[in-house]
Amino acid sequence: MSELERLAAGCLFPGFAGLEPPDWIRRRLAEGLGGVVLYSRNVKSRDQLSSLNAALRAERHDVLVAIDEEGGDVTRLEAANGSSYPGNAALGAVDDVGLTAQVAAALGADLRAVGVNLDLAPVADVNSNPSNPIIGIRSFGADPELVGRHVAAFVQGLQDAGVAACAKHFPGHGDTDADSHLELPTVNVDRETLLARELVPFRAAIAAGVRSLMTAHIRVPALDDAPATTSRAILHDLLRGELGFGGMVMTDALEMRAISATVGVEEGAVRALAAGADALCFGHDLADESVESVTRALVAAVGDGKIAED
Picture 1 (cartoon, rainbow, N blue to C red):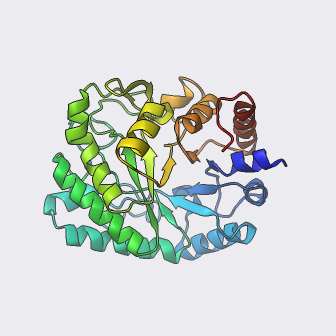
Picture 2: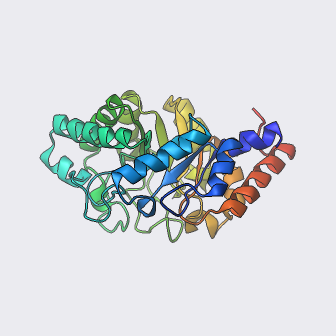
């Protein structure tokens, strides 16, 4: 395996089926795979999950193990019976940032105990559109300032517990009436509204020292015609430049139809890295052959000058 192939593999975060790592994941980790994303299909018990993560680290000690553990409706650790922790809407309604930090710290302690070191949370979207089919109660609320202070508290609580936070979905999936799992939504507001509403919680997350941000598969014509995940204007100029974010930028899952049904997974991966993403998330449907095809596409894109080698 070439050094360029290892670098490409280091950007990939696939999911996999089963309660223990399949052979292809073990092999890919040895070849430089950046990390994995776990889902409820990978969790039977906490002891089992600890063993799974120990097996991953036996292949490479510094692997990033990510999971969506938001509390409330979105839980992987407790998918069978529901989360023991309140969701964001409940925390926002109470509006006690100390409580939000305590909940996040407890979640972080649970995750760290089973070997997870990256939580794809908190949701930093402002719940500004009541017709939104995918955010809703996953948001802390409709007030940008309220959402911002609870996002910051969640980030601090989680990271104080030793688990990196990944605030999502940049630059804001709240004002959409479509689900990016199924199609490409559009946020039709002007730049001033984005700055005053959508970006407020992300600024708060960055000020709180969030380690990672996740992109949204949405169009924001006020910023760029390209989807945010593949937009250099959004990921580089806005996020890195104007907002000064220096952490890891991870895409939402690239097999979601907002990307896979428009430009395709491989081309989406190339465009995301060219735009400024660092990590490419893949969810339920990426297998060994798909990892290989994405890796080949990234290597070819470097050769073609579409992605800078550095």
